[in-house]
Amino acid sequence: MKKTLGRIYILIIMLFLYLPILTLIVLSFNDVKSMSVWGGFSLHWYAELFQSRLMMGAIVNTFSIAILASLIATVVGTLAVLGMAAMKPRTQNVLLGFNNIPMLNADIVTGIALMLFFLMIGAPRGYMTILFSHATFCIPYVILSVRPRVNKNTDRLYEAALDLGASEKYAFCKIVLPELQPGIISGFLLSFTMSVDDFIITYFTRGAGINTISTLIYSEVKIGIRPSLFALSTIIFVVALVVLLIVNIRQDRADRLKEVKAAY
Amino acid sequence: MGELIRLEGIVKSFDDTVVLNGIDLSVDENEFVTLLGPSGCGKTTTLRIIAGFEKPDQGRVYFEGKDITDMPANQRPVNTVFQNYALFPHMSVGENIAFSLRVKNRPEDEIKKKVANALKLVNLKGFENRRIDQLSGGQQQRIAMARAIVNEPRVLLLDEPLGALDLKLRQEMEYELVRLKKELGITFIYITHDQEEALTMSDKVVVMNEGYIQQEGTPQQIYDEPVNAFVADFIGDSNILSGQMVDEKVVRIDGVDYPCIDGREEGFPPRRRVDVVIRPEDIDIVPYGKGQWNGTIISKLFIGVHYEMLVQSEHGKVEWLLQNYDQHDVGEKIGMKVDPENIQIMHKPKSEAESAIELDL
Image (cartoon, rainbow over all chains, first blue to last red; front, side, top):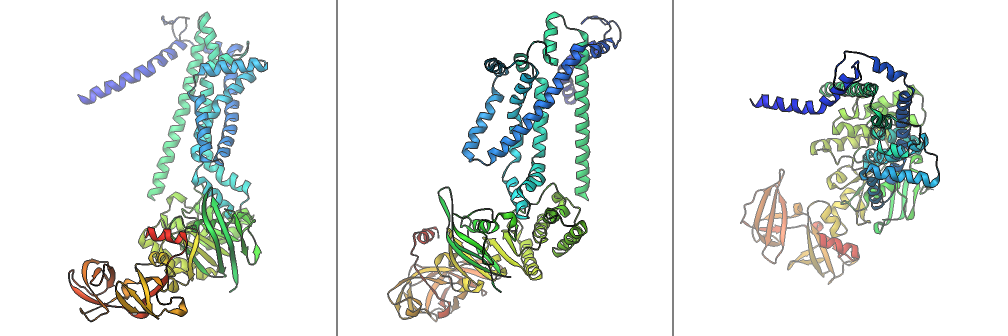
């Protein structure tokens, strides 16, 4: 009895989480442009998606901005962490406090502030302003994920490398960087996700004629949403799902390998 | 055996705290020198100055007579075994040991040979491909040693290398270290807060406290002739008592006069107030009334090899710590005797720093 109740509970949670997405996926294969009538199976919204220049442009924009902004944020953030590590603890804490503010700040405030800033300096709004904005709001996340990797232990390893005759550059590249790597990678991935996900800040900092997936969908909603956008959402969902599965399976395998080795 | 390293008037502070107050130290070639002291005494900072990780505010560091105070750490002919080993976690055991050779771009076959050799020296033959997290604490300790000696440094600096190991392993490693030192024929500068480690392994012990060197000498000298109450208390158990010289080579402690071997010549004229150290194992138990003074046993502990007893003196308020192989019961009245050469007379502390230590005791 208890068991069945538990199962039903989990089922309800799953339905809440995945039923909307399932609806979206089903509708993306619907032959007619209706959200309530099933007109038979069809792939023609997918065909339309790949033929539409507007949509392909938005996809390219979204992902190129995400990759570039994450790269910039990762480099800037990592350097910031290394610089902070050399400061006094009190200064570090103050800086970390400042680092947290942009993350807690409402996106709409950040978006409007960035827009006003671009207007003030007279920057033509477009691809570059979106890129700059995304890099900006990603930096705090990189700092937050890299910083825990820089600690007493890293200092000691660095000293050990110097002690063994390594130059400062060699010690940094061969010892410190590999130590920071997990933090850097998760900072990059976090930035990438935040950037792909963002709508509000992009909306305020883009110019006319440039769209990312999210702003495109938003403008489509006003004139009646097309099922090819369902197709696009479905593809993004499936890609994310596959990536997640691969990461999990690989992690699982690595863990098992470690266990086997430890036992041996 | 010439002088290899010399520190001259080293002063170092962090922010407003003075850590080293003018350290002068000379280390000979092939010597096993131990810097001994409680945490915060400045021993680690001294080691870091020799390694080149810290710059002294004042004073110079010499290596074979050459001033190396401003030489960066990666050019000094010394290698360090770090307290928590600081092994590179993303590298295999072999790569860890090969690190200093890779830095120097040595040919691959030479690296292989030297790594295998270093592993053999620390009794971990064939461990090249193990991962660091697969090793036990003792094994990691040996790998850290192997990594530090593979490059054949002139001096090996060891920063509490046995601190993280359990007692049995630690005693085993003490023998290993002495053996290694013999085989390598290089200078060891060793840091510890463990007086037993210091006494067993070293040629020379340097006792430090509050940024001062309190005493340096052979383990025997440090143990038998501590120069002040701090050293006496830090090295082994002891009875440290306040006394006064009453005659030439006679000291009065707790109302009883004892003959001793220190007098005017050693700087202890009559009427001078002094500190006296008597080691608990140097007090002999004799039948009541037959000794120099009498007392009652008030507590007894079996320590393993011997019994440790607290004895309340009949003459004053002093409680004596005794160590003896024979068993005596609590409440028993005994007589006690001590040979004049086992009474160590010391000057009362003078400096502020030293009086501060007294309070801690």
